[in-house]
Image 1 (cartoon, helix red, strand yellow):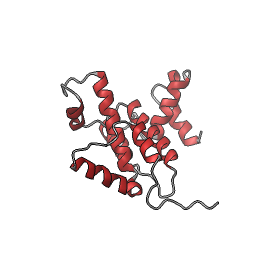
Image 2 (cartoon, one colour; image 1 turned 90 degrees about the vertical axis):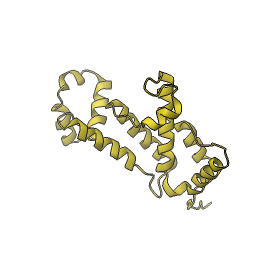
Image 3 (cartoon, helix red, strand yellow; image 1 turned 120 degrees about the vertical axis):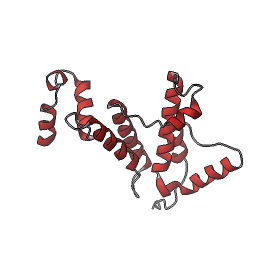
Length: 168
């Protein structure tokens, strides 16, 4: 760990408790490295970590599997600090009573939000696929993935525009 991270860890409010528990230590490290620090204004810190998640995009030469791992890590960091990416509109689609969703409905809304964000974060690389989804929806067929794992599996099986040529 870097000296700067070590200093931040030691200055954490619950450092004495955290240093005795490996899981808590990992959560604190992830919290600090994602800039959600407890001495900052909570509203601003929550907004910043959420904005970081929404700015996340796959790099032009980044492997989809590597981006997926980074995406999942960022999503877990949001959950660990209590920041939701589920918009009320998504709950309206998934839940019978959006004001009081069941655990299953909340989980489905979360997966739908992750799948949607993951597809959009792949940017122009899979533009043809996004166009196909939109056209199918216009024709009354909804083929949008509803879980993060299904979104990843679909993209993994597709050739993206501008794919690097493999030299044998």
